[in-house]
Length: 219
Image 1 (tube, rainbow, N blue to C red):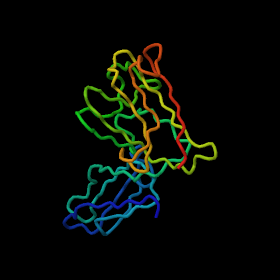
Image 2: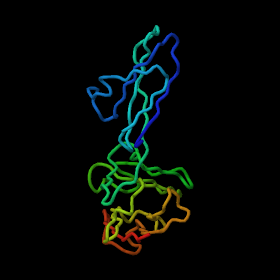
Image 3: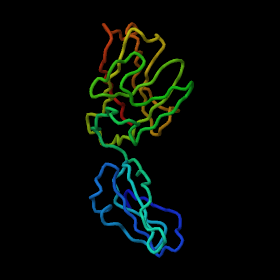
């Protein structure tokens, strides 16, 4: 069944059944799955037909128990599915990483995160945030959601990114973009490498955001 989820909760003493309501985090409480709860005699509920890569809230109320009010909201997220090409532009406007993105520190303590400014970058190229990290002798990886390369069509696919470059960066600072069949740098193919220091090739005339586009090889 596409996009399922199984909810479970502790057994309430004296309960004869449970009312369960759920909704997307972004939806109002007037949606049918919240306004009209599902009743079940078990302390689990299997859901189907959910939207992939989406956060949901759910609450449970015991029927027949001494306490019948709804619990506070619990949050769960559905699994990510491969995004078709052309993909949506990712601008990192939420406070946390996009739901299908992951990040990990390789060395040091600084990780990738959506920010409004950092490390000499005064503002986003568009919107209010961008994906950034402090360099300071640290390495970190950020992995995007899976991309369905079979939807690229006869003209193939391209990587299209904006990178902020300035004169304050160390010449060894670099941002590299890779592609792989798994969320792992091991065995990945490098597509692009940019040094934010403006004096490092390809040199640029001054501080600012610069656009870089490169083809993604087939296969």
